[in-house]
Length: 437
Image 1 (cartoon, rainbow, N blue to C red):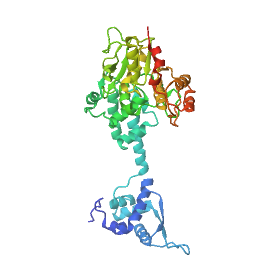
Image 2 (tube, rainbow, N blue to C red; image 1 turned 120 degrees about the vertical axis):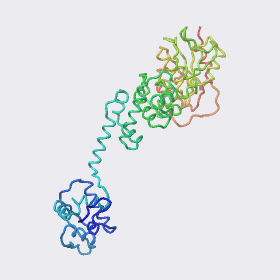
Image 3 (spheres, helix red, strand yellow; image 1 turned 180 degrees about the vertical axis):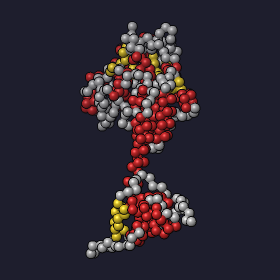
Image 4 (cartoon, one colour; image 1 turned 45 degrees about the vertical axis):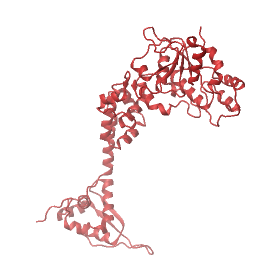
């Protein structure tokens, strides 16, 4: 009695008919047919067969090999047609296999129906990314065109891994907004690993994408609603982006790095600042988020400058008589952004001044976009006046351009004169504005 063939031990007759290296290319052609169609019926037409391949097909179908005549001058080739229903019957009667497809799988392993596999994979992805989400921010982000692409990259195209990743991201988002919770503690509490939300981790990347799309704290993000200049002046600061996004959701990352420099910021009586009146002080991200300060700035003007030297000069000249002043120290980091947003939400009228150069305009555009600040002696007339009074030796502005969103004539004026004016060079014009009775 002939033993039943298995995938590891094909029928010996099948090996003689269709096995071996010489017929490997033919078997691949036959396999591709089933990969595309998946069915075991129909007629399969084969052309450009070698003599050995044509003979194997003829023997498999139980008919004599008859070569087709090649056109004069062309190389000899053969063709054949296989009625799969009839061929499958022959293979079954001989006890070789139930079908040609099964015979090929005995010789070279399983054949995957690509169309069916693709449809199944698409269904699994739809189930993984389209499942109802208990967190509205995650659900809204999943409707964006870029969401599925990011999830696939983070999970190496595996829908099961994607489903687990979305569950982890949702667990984190459910804890937000926080109030001064460290990122490591958030990761440990929700994911069981203090480093699971470190930069580069898949869950952190996904959560940050959701937070960028829909800030959890609900604060207005006006950066997309303003006109952008030629160098993308409303873009978030690259070096601080991750920490800044976490901070908007109340999560601390490097909470003591780059504290905000302030002078004479008024608070409610029961919530004093540590700084002495008239002396500059620093507010860390930790202070601003863990125990939010009750600012007494409603309908008051709070001035904002770019360079720390302005705060120092103001403290030296005006002391306690100086109006409330905040310094961004260049592009605002997380602490500076949180402070400006808190002041704006407390009703302060923010006025901003910075350097008259392309980087200064980029910073100014960003500051005004995030907290609704207005320009402070930062128009084209102020620049032209500064050109006439500030010390300078030669043109030092590069060819790049950043258009000021608040004054369309400022960038052309700067191009015309080609001079960068540092904020410190015009401090004499700023001090009278800072003096308060």
